[in-house]
Each structure stands twice: as C-alpha cells, then as structure tokens.
Amino acid sequence: MKNAIVTLPRTRWEWIAFCTLVAREMWRFLHIWRQTIVTPTLTTSLYLLIFGISLGRRIDLGPGILYLHFIIPGLMMMAVINSAVANASATVYQMKNNGSIVDLLVSPLRPSLIAVALAIAGTIRGLVVASLVMMVGFYLGVPFPHQPLLALMVALLTGWMFSCFGAIVGIQARRYEHMHSYTTMIITPLTYLGGVFYTLHVLPVFWQQFSRLNPIFYIIDSFRYAFLGFSDLHPWRSVAIIVAVTVAMSATLVHVLVHSRRLRA
Image 1: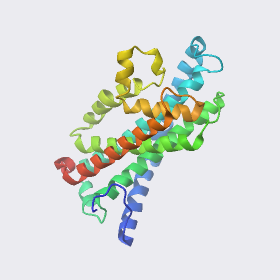
Image 2: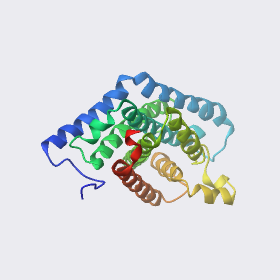
Image 3: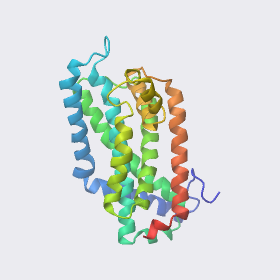
Image 4: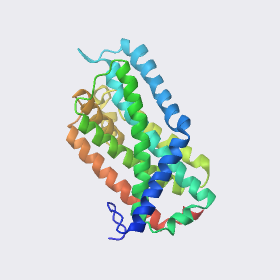
C-alpha cells in the first residue's frame, strides 16, 4: 500500500519531512495574512451585508427564518472552498515554477503524504476564514450552530476535498492564468448553483435534478442543517456523498502526483 490515500509517516525522517511541509504551507499563507485571510473575510462579509441585511428584509422564507441566517452557512462553505482551492493551487504552481517541486518529489515523503500535507494546510486556511465569517455572523445576530460537530465535520471534508482539487489544478496549470480559469469556469458556477442563496424547492424540476449532480449542493445543504436544523435532503445522505467525493478527489490527487508529466513543466 505504498500510495494509500489514508496513511501516516512510518519513520522518523518521514515524520520530520511531513511536519516540515505542513508547517511551511501554513507559514506561507499566514505570512501574507492580509491577502489570504483578511481579504476573503471582508469579501464574504459584504455578501452578508448586501444580501443578508439589505435585500434579505424583502425575502420571506417562512415564520421564524431570517434570510441572513439562511445564507450564512452557504457563504461560510463558499469561503472554505475558495480558500482551500487557492491555497493548494498556488503553492503547487509556485513549486513547479521555481523548481522546488523536484526537491519535494525526491524527499522521503510518499505521494500520499504529500497529498495529505497539502490538504491539511488548505483545510486549515479555509477553516480560519470560515470561522472569521461566522464571528461576523454572530455579531449580526446569527445563532450558534444547531449541531456544531456535524458542522465541523462537513467543513473539514469540504476543505480537504477542495484542497485536493486545488492541488490538481496547480499541477495541470501551465500558466498562472490557467488556475483562475479553472476557478471561474468550474468552482464559481457550481458554488452559485449549489444553493447558497436559495432552496432547492424554488427551482423548476429540471434545475432541481441538475443541482443533485453538484457536490457543492450537498455540502451547503448538510452544513445548513448543522446550523439551522433544516435541509432540502436528508443530511446524512449528503454527508455520505461528500465523503465519497472527498475520497475520490484524494485518490485522484495521489494518482496525479505519481503519474503526471506536468509536475516538472
């Protein structure tokens, strides 16, 4: 099981290399915290102010449900997704561009451990940004999560999934502009069609079925249940789909790390 997805370092040198890579990735985004943490927090907070407070007063979701409370779970997951993708894609592309990827490939780390390290760093960055957004929500009167452990589990899986996706993007991108095109053409449409600002039941039947093909829909729906106690689908069904997609994305990243010819190009 040389390239197993879930694995731990077996020797002292693997532990040192693994911890060093995780620490380096965390130091990288913390060193430029204004860009990696403050900017996405402010951007997401603007969504809360514009949609949640200004426009939300005109939207009726039923008795006892404020639109501000409804959208904050989706906005938090959007922050996790964007931060995780940006962190992993940028670091892999930079390592390719400056040639340091070769040093990583010849280190004691197996490809599966490299994938885990990149996923951990991206997930932590996503959780930091989402936590700050949640604090802004608390200040605006959003209640504490209905099921905090479920919310944490969904957030961790989401960060892990999209960190793996971001690393794959960084490997495949030939130019810096390619990374933004992946985000613009894949992540942004899936996010806005994932139920951040609406429920599944307000859509026509065709678009309801289309949304069920979108993994981000299951992320937001289950996270909204953890926050507010209601969802469009059964929350544990959504969690099972999230776990399956996360495992598939992790396996894909390990495969790409082993076989891709673009790691040095």
